[in-house]
Image (cartoon, rainbow, N blue to C red; front, side, top):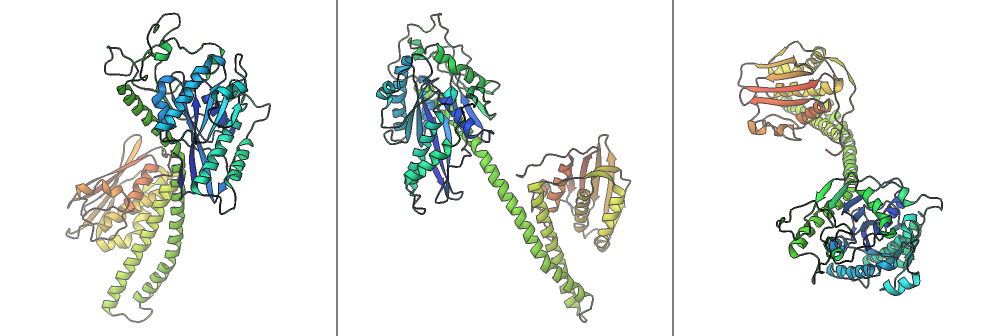
Amino acid sequence: MGFINLAEKTINAKLVYYGVGLGGKTTSLKVVHNLLCPKDEVKLVSINTEQDATLLFDFLPIDLGTVDGFKIRIQGFTVPGQPKYVVMRRYVLSGADAVVLVVDSQEDRIEDNLRAIEDLKENLDLNGLDWTRIPLVIQFNKMDLPGTLSVEEMIEKYRFRDVETFPSIATEQQGVLEAFAQASAQLVEDKVRQYGLGKKEGEAPEAIALKARERILAYAPAAEEPKVDEAPLGAGVLLDLQVSDQDNPLEAAGERRPQGEAAQEEVPEEETLQEDTPQIAVPQETDSEENPGKEPVEAEPPQEGTGQGEGLEKPESGILGDEEHTLLGQAVQSNLELAELYSDLSEYKALVERKNRELVEVNQLISHDLKKPLTVFKTVISLLLGGHLGELQPTQAEALKNASESVEYMQELIDDIVESSRLDYDGMHFEFEEVDLMVLMGTILRRLRFLIEDQGIQVRVEALPVIKADMKALLKIFMNLIGNSASYMDPNKERGILRIYGKDLGDRIEISVEDNGIGIPEDSQEKIWEKFSRGSNTSGTSGTGLGLYIVRQLILGHGGDVHVESEVGKGTTFVLSFPKEPVPIAHSPIA
């Protein structure tokens, strides 16, 4: 999974906690999360089984330093430890850059621990990873319980490589951060060597790794810190992959996990983790003839003392059949991919927001710079047309009029681009007040008087109500709509007619802007609300293609709506609906 992102100057790596079920992997990862993310800056994501959990957190926000300008980021995972989840463990281990092997120190878990180590070797090989070289540390957990082996005994039994070992009591936060820090340091050193970093700054990989380890250990808690059990688990997206323990061949063969203190120690914590989380059923591992299609079923686990499952023989090859392997593998892979995509979402969102903000700022700067020469052009053209710089020939006057129209169009385009980009990023901040629509229409018609008179349009404004809205937004909305109606009148008709009227619909006010212009083709009526989109029959008239987009966004911002009714050759009606009590819609900076 580890990869280098040249654009963002980051090195991303994956660290996996591996070991027996209920050995302390989940608790250890939660300890690391709580210590390094005390404000829950990064969420925990969980894919749960009934008694075990696959946890992962997004890239930790801690500063491991930079190497040649590259930031190193670590993402943590756990795997379910029960033997029947071999497929899930294999998928989680895929692409691992480092491993923390969590060993249960109790004497009655020796066989389970040895089996987990062999399973680790096998799954690393199946994923194309070299188990003799991958960065790895061993964590001897539950050292506080009775019946545990000594550190020397565990080193002799479980230390299959020359690696660091760490005695730990995960529930008391002892030894966990140290193991994580050492594994992370090895991971950093491995990545520095892999990508040939550190040469510019003249630092050896070992020195860079040591600094990363020290930065992590700086998060170590004081002695009076609460236990991890008392610390709340960060509320994140929890995907619960529910798998029954029914027909577990290891337990059926009499190899049931001891139900003493060790087993009870972490079960309540896992149950807390799963509380109120959505359940996603996975095809169950059952040979029942009643369920030949492997449909998801609810199954009770075997109860002690009932004799259920006793006397069954352990299968000679594997725990799951080929079909179960395929189904479970697909389910696990899909949910792991979903969880990782969720983890990446905040990073992508922040990146898009930053890019949007940069675009808005660039648009504002460009518009400011472009308006200066446009103002000069407009002034010079006005002086020329007014005869202040000498008498003009008719052809010269006509050319200057065309130039003046082009300058006006460019100014409109600049204003619309800035307005639309600002709406996309920051939304519209409304100030709602009582607005008399009749007074507003008078203001707009005065501003558009020359356009209306030039087109010979007859305007009819019927009685309009007072509504509660943002005055500036309404001004933009109706300037656009009335200006469009005047611009797109049908030159073949004797007189253009523009009618503006309203209806009281109880809790809403409906305002219609109706004209007898060229109309909008049916195939364009949905597209006209998009940016830079215009009707397919408007090629002869200048326009930015942003006006109706801005109109719709402003109306939606009031909690209203707008739609168009049009027929080519007969005219167009824009119908605007405003609630009497505006309900501003929450704006997302990602449009």
